[in-house]
Length: 325
Image (cartoon, rainbow, N blue to C red):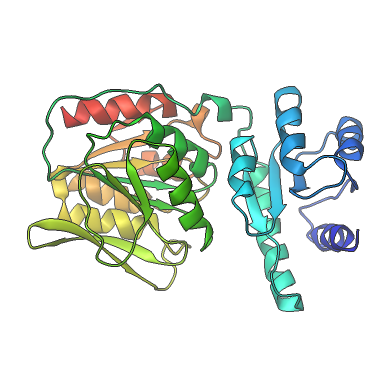
């Protein structure tokens, strides 16, 4: 109760946020949702009478609502995102004012982003399993960038691809620790090898490398093979890892031998880098507004002229396959 009230008081201090109420359990929350019709709900994973993920699964089909989860460091956040949550924040491990203040600041930002989210589209984010038996150029590489809503979008894409795919490099805006959990989760549910990238990891067909949550990832060519450089650095375009950093390196190292994809997310990270990829001869794809949770990054990329084709998420796998043929 103390934690809940502390969060409510802190959020209320932001002039753009009005807290209409707090609830002790999902049953109270259900009644308050019907009464107040909130724009956004924050939801703890651990709740009495029914856990937050079970409540989310019951809520979303009946009352689609932007939800930001509050969770300890646990893979359960991915179950929540799969159930329809827009984003999540982690509870501070150390009970210090500074750690709590940082978490509250992040929560306020994500609540504002969630208020613009296109909820109710998450069930459409899973394309059919596709097959590809034709040979492709082994020097090809696929680079993907995503932010808010991206974990589920990426899960749908990766699961749809067959083993015979060019190497992939991905930046998803996600906190440290969770990037490895996310990679491991995808690895367990797809034909491809998916792992959190380590410095100088090789990029090869059938492998997907995901940037660590606090490291920039760049594509490099060494001894005739693609590898990734993974290193800490200042934020670029507001993020570390940055999609722009990855895409710009792909433009230099792979040129026309690359396919670039920019998915759902707030802000502009990746748009300038995707333009550099396109100018270097790469085929570039943007996710369309209707299938995005947040139509930010793809929108800016489209406006810059960085996108060769803009298509629904469900159509992206087949467009990638067509570009490889």
